[in-house]
Structure formats: C-alpha cells, structure tokens
Length: 379
Image (cartoon, rainbow, N blue to C red; front, top):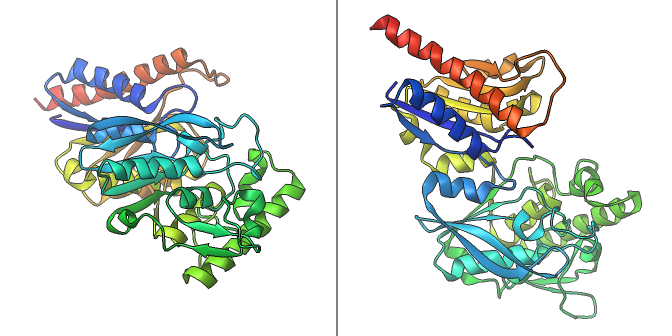
C-alpha cells in the first residue's frame, strides 16, 4: 500500500469529514507506516466547504465585515486558495443558522455579494459559490445588488429586492455590475435539480423549512416567477426551467442569469479543483464514507461521485458508512468496490459523537488489518 486517498464526507452530527480523515489516517499508519496518505475532507456545498478546500488545496481563511441575512452587521469568512480561487459559502452570510428570525420574505443574500467583492479585491480569478443552507428566497438579488446590479420598482426607485418584494421589480440594470466578474471563472456548487418556481420550485420545496407558511410560499413562488420573466425580457436569459435554478431560494437561477455562473454538482466541483484524475491515478485505494448510504447517495452525492470518477481510472473505492439502507447495493454500479458499516451491535442509533468516532475507528482498523494480512500473505 504505497498511496491511499481519504475522501470522506461528514457523518452528519457526529463526525466531521476532517475528524474522519484523522481517524482513518491513524489506522493506516499503524499498519502501513510508510504509506503516503492524502487526506481530502469532503464538503460538497454546505457548511464546512471553504475549510474543506483549504485542507485539500492549501490557502487561508479571510474575514470580512458584511451584512447578515436580515441586513445586520456581521463578520463572515471565505477561503482564498493558493491558485487564486475563492470559495464562498452562501451560509456564511445568509445561512439559516444565522437568522435570528426565519422569514424568507425579508432575508437577503446581500452579504454574500460583499464576500464575492472582497475576494475580487484581493485578486480572485475564480469564484466557487457554495449555495447550501440558505435562509433566503431572494433569487440571489442581494448578491447581485452588492455587485452592482440595480433594481427599480414601478416608480423608478432603486431598491434591494428580498423574497417578499421580488414582484415589485420593474426594471433591471446590469450595466454597472462589477466588470471583474467577466474575467473570472464562476461556478455554483449546486446539488439540487429543482427549477426556480412551480410545485417543485424553490418556494414550495424549501421555503417552509425557512419559516414560510402556505400563504408566504405562494407569495415567494409568484415573486420568483416574475423575476424569471423579467430577466428573460431584460437580460435575454431564460432560467425558468434551469435545472438546479431553485437552489438556495432560486439563487442558482439568479447567479446564472445575472453573471453567468455555471451550476455544477458540488462533489464534481471539488474533484475538478483538486485535479482528482491526476491525484488518484497512481493510488492503491480510495476510502470515502458518510453517515448513511441511501438512495440520495446514488444521485451524484459524495460516495457515488467519487466512485464514478475512480471507476474510469480502475482504482478501487471502499465506502465506510454509519449505516446502509436496503437497496443501496446499486452503489456497486457506481464504482464502489465494497461497503462497510460502523455500527457494532444491533441497537438504536446513538448520536453520541465520541461513540461514533470509536465505532468508525474500530471498523476502519479492521479493514486495514485485512489489507495488512493480505500483504503479509503475498510476501
């Protein structure tokens, strides 16, 4: 075992991806001390994404004074990688965990746009915007306004639209948008496929968890629909059926319409950024994992995303997971060689982090013991 890649997702609520990497590496080094272990803790768009990229690529965390989800003054951070790529989490300035009051009619992404502007100020050539965990439904208008796009109501007054005022937008002027964006590569990490509006759109599917009641959902949905028609008429970009456009309160649609952001699955963005094919080409094995292997895992999430890319290279992938639901065997068709679960006894799940870490260490150590035994057998 000369080279092993560790690429686990977090075990939600119990073991972070960084902690999982540490546990796995300790086990490997105990049996293969000379092995080159490369740890890439995975986060595919939610909280922790910026830190994950810094761990994988090197860089630093920048702190910026900006606006929070209710236009309050906060300090948020983003990652600036060594290759002048900025990784910005929408949740850092517009996240649901930041909102003191859940009301998607009033919340804004304005602070996220301030983070983008700050990154451009220090030389960012690529912007990766991770749009998970938002408290907003503003079509990304807050971000756009912070970056120079101007919105006017029917009376000609300029304002910053929020979810509850999207329908008031009568004119959009994008001529003053930050010109530096035209020369930057722009990517949104987006793992949902929902369109901007309609029964499967941003408001109907995601707004209730952000504090919207039935009446509010209809208001928000109508506002997003209005904006889709408005940007088509004024900017010449039709995002009404954009796959993933409903992400983060239709921020995905807005970022594409206003600035040309490319929407891409979060795991693929990370794998592209770390140059996965080159990194994994000479690896003996890749270990990944997550809290629970289920049908969502097959839909372009971390384990299947890594498996599919490794399959083309002929590199085996082993998934170590907290639990595996019935039907997850289909993961083998996505380049995963084997799946191991960490729970030792048939008992109810215990979310105690320390116990979960112990279970992960026990399971992973036994996997490595098998590999070490096989090595000794062949010797």
